[in-house]
Image 1 (tube, rainbow, N blue to C red):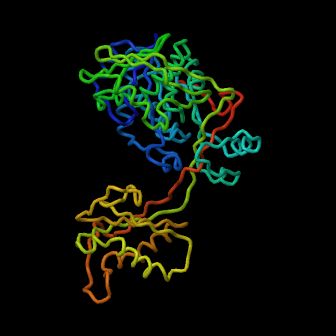
Image 2: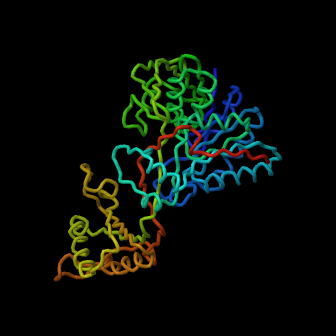
Image 3: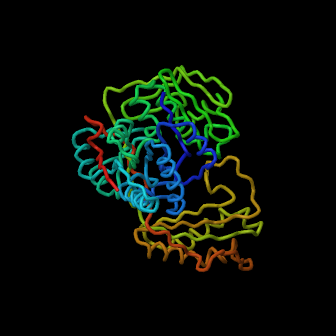
Amino acid sequence: MVKVLIPSGALGLKYDRAALANGLAAAPDIIAIDGGSTDSGPSYLGRGISKYSRASTKAEWRDLMVARAEIGVPLLIGTAGTCGADPAVEWLLDITRELASELGQSLKIAVLRSEQSALSVTEALSQGRIKPLAPELPISAELIADCTHVVALAGAEQIQAALETGADIVIAGRTTDTAVIAALPLARGCHAGGAWHGAKIGECGALATTNPNAGTIMIEFDAEGFTVTPMAETGAATPRSVSAHMLYENSNPFVLYEPGGHLDVNGARYEAHGRSCRVTGSEWVTNDTYTVKLEGARRVGFQTISLTLVRDPRYVARVEEWLGLIRDDILGPVQANDFTVEFRLVGQNATLGDLDVQAVPPGEVGVLTIVTAEEQARATEIAKLLNPALLHYPLTKDEPMPTFAFPFSPNEVERGAQYEFCLNHVMVLDDPMEAFSLEVVEI
């Protein structure tokens, strides 16, 4: 049996300290936590930075470093610094060094890096080792060179190599969310289907329980399956809450693809045991080839935004017509294609746009104007060009000039460089470690 203690869904999301203490008292074999994902868009990977504040990350990581020292088991984090790029890994490593000094800890740290060079990815492309996923995106040497950061998602094998160093702490770059949980149970011979399935259920901590905000859970892996138990005093892992988590960030609730194979839970059985849920019957299917997913982000320009608040009932009812008039009158004479302007109607359909079939007439609309251009100054210039119209433009020529509200002064906010995800591909590897580097640091 292998016990994996998962403090929360990600470092920086908070967790119940009492639940963590309960978990430590239950004698886990490892403490494993995720550091982030692509949830918050491409900018973090594009810039190679963390989404979470340094202060909150340090506070939570400090408690986990203390916990690790108390019970003498490895502490493992995957996708360090939200995006898992090398600068984000170094950021967390620096925090770890700082805390080790403050806590008086001497540590052996295994650092698993996932970042890929443009040269290595381009070579793999020329060798036919880059395969598209659906939906298929175009790929070329030029596109790869445009990426500011490209990472490969490590699986269980790379995490196992890091653990085999005997490290006290493993700081891994980009990994699959499940790999950090499944690695040790697989290495110790637990049921492969159960290891991957349990890892999927546990990737977000207590989200798969009836008390999701508690954060901390324990998963016990064995030769037949796994058992999920919340560490908070309230809440339970039920067959419904556990089985439902296969739907989370997964297009197929019965199949999950990972490096080297896929998980099939069609035959899984879920049984309630008090506050715990026992799962058996999951199957791991090994692939003939070993592939890792690639994630890349590239800069697509610079952005300036502004916000206009519209409350006049007549203008709210005809806001799209009003914006169309502004676009034609103000932007129509500008003969250039080096910028784009997007109007998002906050309070009406800003999230889904034309796909929103449940929109109801609002009492107020916030017009979020998004200008993207090749240079920051150009984006701001176009936003300023629109400024007078967004404040005073009338629906008809023979009516009094209206006045709307700008919540800020100046109303133009420069957002800086903007990025997009541009890779949706896997890379074929002959050796699971060939796209990754492993360094042992002693402090």
